[in-house]
Every structure is written in C-alpha cells, then in structure tokens.
Image 1: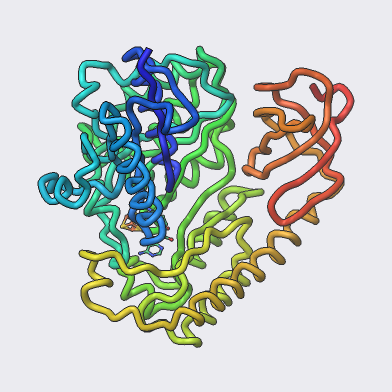
Image 2: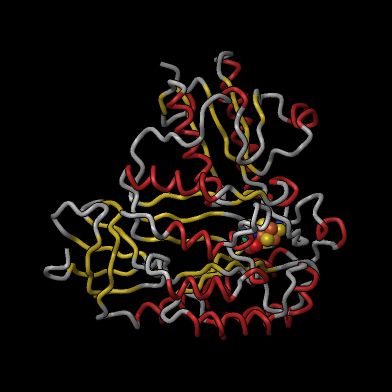
Length: 417
Ligand code: SAH
Ligand code: SF4
C-alpha cells in the first residue's frame, strides 16, 4: 500500500484542508504515516501570512530535497498560501516540488474523487470551510493574493456535508472562512450567514455550531440576533481588531475606527449575553509609534477579550504595506510590545476565568489525555476534569474548581453525565 505524510502549519482553514487531503489520500488507497521518511508522497499545507511560517516550509522542503536524493520515487506536493498563480516561477524556486495546487483546490493527481465522502472516523468536533478567499485587501495581508476572491460553498453542499459528519459522530462544527460573515453574497438569492446558521442548526444530532473569522465591517445586526436566538449557535465570536489606533487602522485599510469597533462590541454584548470575545492583534505595523501602540493596549484594557492572538508585523512582498511603508519599528521594540500585550492578556484572561470558579458549565467532551478528559464549554473555554467513565461526545456538567488564563479545571457534577 502506498504511503502519505501530511505536514500542516497555519490557520484552521489549513487544518481543515489537511483533514480533507488525508481523507482523499485514503480513498486513493494510501495509508498515512507519521514520518516523511516512510512516505511515498509528502503533502505540505503551507502558510505565508508571516515570514517565519514561510521559512518553516522552506526548511522542510530542503529536508525533503535531500530525502529525494536517496529515494527518487518520493513525490512532494505543495498547497496553501505559498502557492501563487504563477506555477512556472514556483517550479524554478522549488524544483523539489512535483505538484503545486492552490489552497482549497483539488490536486490534479487526485481529481476524480468527490470531496464529500469522508473515510476514517472524525472526532467530536470538525471544521467545515464555507467560504474560500478574501476580498478585503488589508494592506499587510497576503491572503487575498494567494487564496483569490471570495467564493461561497452552496447551502445544499454544506447541508449534505453536515449531515454526513453528524452521522459519523461529529457533535460540534466550526464553520470556517477568512471572512465568514461575507458568506453567500456571491450565491443566487444572496443568502447570508444568519440564514446559513438557521438552516444548519436544524440538523438533528448536532449540538453546537461556531464560526470563524469575522470582519468587524460585516458583523450585521441580523447575525447578532441569530447568535442570540439560535440555541445551537455558541455565544463566542472572534472579531479581529488588529490595532487600537485610528491612524494605524486606516493604514491597515481595516475600514473602521477604534471607536466604531468599541461601539460594535457594546452592541454585540448587549445582543448576546454571556458572549466570549476573542481577537487578533498585530504589533509593530510600519510607523507605529509608542503612543499608537499604547492605544492598542488601552483598547485591550477596555474590551477585556477572553483571548487574543498576537502577532508581530511581518512584511509580505507584494502587499501594499510592504511595498509602500518601510518596516521601521526596531525588532527589539516589536518584541517588547508583543511581550507587554502578552502579559496584559494573561492578566485579563486570568481574571475573567477566575470569576468562573464555583460555576457549573456544560462541557462537550472531546477526548482523554493522560487520564484527564478535555472538552469545551459553549463559550469555547477549555475545561479539564477527571472521570473513569467513557464520555467522548457527551455533554456533562462540570463545576469549576481551578482556573488559569488559558484553561479551567473542575469536577464532574453528580447526575450530570
Ligand atoms: N481574516 C482574518 C485573518 C486572517 S490572517 C482577519 O480579518 O483578521 C490571520 C492573522 O494573521 C490576522 O488576523 C493577523 O493578525 C495576522 N497577520 C496577517 N498578516 C500579517 C502580517 N503581514 N504580519 C503579521 N501578522 C499578520
Ligand atoms: Fe487578510 Fe484582511 Fe482578508 Fe483577513 S480580512 S484575510 S486580514 S485581507
């Protein structure tokens, strides 16, 4: 039996993509192996959002190049955000790669396989991409260049995939896209994400629905209402702000001011009681002064996010920011700003979570790790607890006893399972 190995880095879209490719390979009669040394085909799902991610893939490719000298039969396929529209230039730069295919596209050596059939056993939770690409062109971001324009998958296709997943034991689904709340604008009749959530939440056997990521400019009142009204839709929103300073936001081309973002958060929290809010932030954007950085810090203090994905600005060739503005914030300042926000967020998340001590939360149990069960509550908080019962895929009540910034610990409540 031929063997494949998949290496993935980057966002949840890539994780979902790796799962899809794994399924396709198995349908093709390949079996998965842990080490590239044992494989006949190595698939790399790449990320180009930051230079450091790209470098990890380039290092991998160098290792594979060596491996190919000993094993000329080994084939290498590259997909994800490093693949652009000009394969001939890519072929010259990466001669060790046998196949290139764009993010979310079908590799031509596997083409006749329908994407919906999923062999193997999925877990309790699954990712489902609903929209590919991005139309926003934030000035720092490579994604629109590498993933192309927004393309929504149809409601029928998504419904069928959901039914299939649930029949295989999936209980929680996270809908994915670079900008999920733009879903549907390119489909006949222009349905929106609220329509999609309404339809999908009718699926019997499905317990929870989540979605990632939302652009603040597309966060509609309708979507807020469906978050509040649809039982299965979890009160958890990732709303990337990127910066808390108006001038920086303008140069980033985010399309809102800090004040507008704060107002949106206020409306969202009013509409959805108990909402968990997470965000993405970049420090060290070109020209970012200390005072502008402090505005980001102050926004974090005002909003008090449940979690923040922090990144240091990395110029991406071809993007507006990389072409127009020098990357002039010194590296030590970037690191200091990052560390300062990391400390701030650890304190805030620690305080938010500490307030949950003594509360009983409903946990969807995912899996067991070294004797401890692991799951999440509806807000997406990670919860660990001990039990000798087999609980995977079940909803249990857990009373929180210990908390930290990144997770909660508790005890299963009698009769809760
Ligand atoms: N669509 C999402 C984000 C996709 S990229 C959004 O609108 O926010 C994921 C995250 O990577 C971004 O939120 C941003 O924080 C980070 N990122 C993107 N480009 C970057 C760059 N050039 N340098 C550093 N971080 C970047
Ligand atoms: Fe990149 Fe902006 Fe699109 Fe997010 S919305 S993927 S940051 S261009």
